Length: 312
Image 1 (cartoon, rainbow, N blue to C red):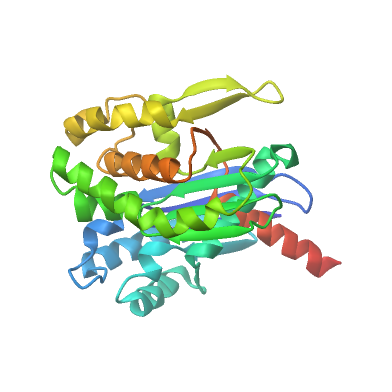
Image 2 (tube, one colour; image 1 turned 45 degrees about the vertical axis):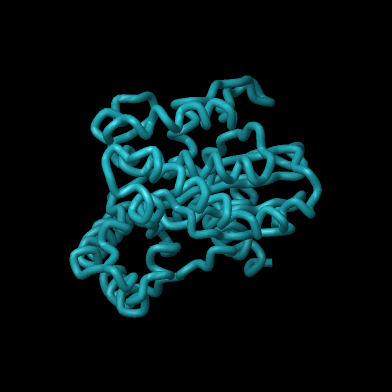
């Protein structure tokens, strides 16, 4: 069976097609990605401007064409923080569904965290024990922790890289004072979450699963042997913290010359680094491992599970 997952996020509209079967590992066949950075289109009242909605419609129509070309049996269309929090969200959803030709599932922040946690659990396996997950998107930061496939705690806070860039780091390069304001805001925003997760058992394994985290790991992290001989990428908090002033001094055009920093992430990577460092500090994380599986794989895995249950 071939499934497609359409992830309408704050940064990108990404359609992943994969061959799946109950009990098996999803095998990706096609990936179609359009960079939008929707936070650029937010109006002062929190709505997505008309230009942004039209860009969404175009990207969704493109993803639909690719899904049809790939002959997917079902397209699982989801949207996250940028759409769910927009002041004109209902109208944006209506227009996306018209371009898509089917309903759109708008995920809550906690559901997004739970699905990403499921993907990371499956990737790391049961031997990883108690897992703590951090995932930074364009609009929000998701955190989840637990020892099973469903987390014991899941949270979403408005510390996404795109959102924080627009709100706190409007200049290129950002000033030191603005970076410090963002750091203080991130720590204050994380305080209620910190208390909640501090009450849980200490994690045996900490994972990060977003494109921003993967980019930062390529910049400041290091590889280590995996359990099956494969290579893992580890990201230490100390090295991340030491890189933040250097990243902030560089203009966006120069940051994309650094290892791991792609052109679509160069404007937001400083905010991502500050938010991630704050989360690691608040949650007492010294180092995390990068997971290549994230939300899209979680959506696929949950659908496969439900398909198997219906057949039983």
